[in-house]
Amino acid sequence: MFWADVIYVGILLFCVFVGHLYRKIECINVKQWMCTIMGFILATIVSGRHVIHPIICTLINTIIITKLSSKKCHLASFTFSFVYLLFIFRLGDYVGLPTSPSHTNLVLMILTLKLSGLAFEINSATNPPTNDPEGLNSEAIKNVGFLDVFHYGFSYMGILTGPYYRYRTYWDHLHRPFSKYVDPWPLTLYKLKQIACYVVLYLVLSELYPTRYVLTEDFAERAFLYRYFYMYPTFLTFKLRMYIGMALAECACQMAGLGAYPVESKPAIGLGPRDYKTIETLSTVPDKLKDKEFNFDTVYNMNVWKLEKCHSTRTAMKSWNACIQYWMGVYVYKRFPYKSLRTLATFTLSAAWHGWSAGYYICICQIPIFLLSEDIGMKFYQQSEENSLAKKGWQLLLWYEKTTCMAYLGVPFLLLDFGESLHYYKSVYFAGHGVAIALYIIFRFLKAKTHIE
Image 1 (cartoon, helix red, strand yellow):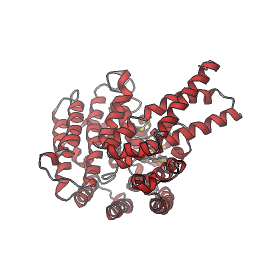
Image 2 (image 1 turned 60 degrees about the horizontal axis):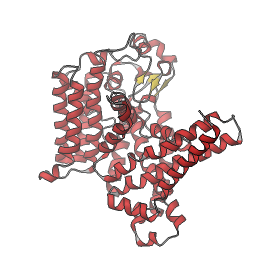
Image 3 (image 1 turned 180 degrees about the horizontal axis):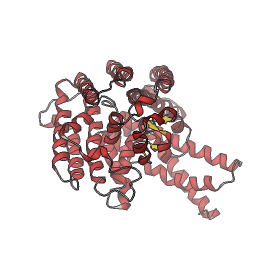
Image 4 (image 1 turned 30 degrees about the vertical axis):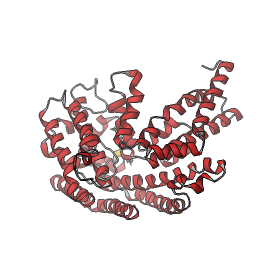
């Protein structure tokens, strides 16, 4: 695991620093091929002969996207991509196929979202809203060819760990002039300094609080409070690992100029500009871009400060792997035909996307247990007088619940095995469930007494 992580970080650092040279390439065709060749080489380095899986997935999606009707291609691409990821790739060893490296799984996971997401983009372009403020029917989507799908799928930015970005964002970084007028190094340097701190903390905490210690007899003999509070530093260690990977991936996109948009176009995470007409206008008068302010919010995948500071589980979820949350929200939650089952369908698909291990489902599908009490508590918080002791008290209580939700449900996410997850919960007497249920009962009682709306 250690050397796999070293190789993983080394590849991400290469993606970061090669961006300075990549961004200077003037010819669009050369730039596109360089981006694809580097991505394919990196995928091959981590996958070896198993790179055949990303190739097959991309090839068949290319046929679906370019040959099927725009009214059907999104359903066909979505179905094929997830069937291939979940059954052919992940369960192939049951029928004699060789087991693939974990990094190949990461490549295929992000490829599944990108390729099916492209099909959804094409479908959305067939019936855009009036005036089309977000540019759903933009020039980028009108002539997507066979090679375009391959170039997008194997672009080196985010090839291993994301962030997810739309095809239009990829097309814009090639055909729009914005990357020429933005200097991503100051922001990248700032993030690299943060990453250095994360690495030090991660190495210290992973040594002091290893996850699998919760399965040992020594842990079982510890005092209950020790066993209960052990989940907080354990999950913090996992979060630091995620912060390192996600921040490096963001830096790789920034240095390549991917996701650079003028602030006045109102860029949003995953989506890109909310005001795409401004993008189209500014692209025709590049001289005006010299005085414009830019940001990389489109590829801002992990808002660490917001995640740690917020007092809402829903806010934390949106801040965690935010570009993936955007994909799940737009292409699953909003499009699922049965409104009453949207949340369950989104959580279940998110768990399945991560893998078949029981720990993913135990973690993700139990989040609604904590949301039941949080939704009531948020109403108390919102209706409390500003700067009052009551409002600060509700904020602290909700922050504790959010932190407990993530840490308590995060342990099974790390252990993965059902039996081991159950063993851990038994060792802490299902205390996290007790916290969620107790808070719900208390909040319901207070709601009935105060008649809060």
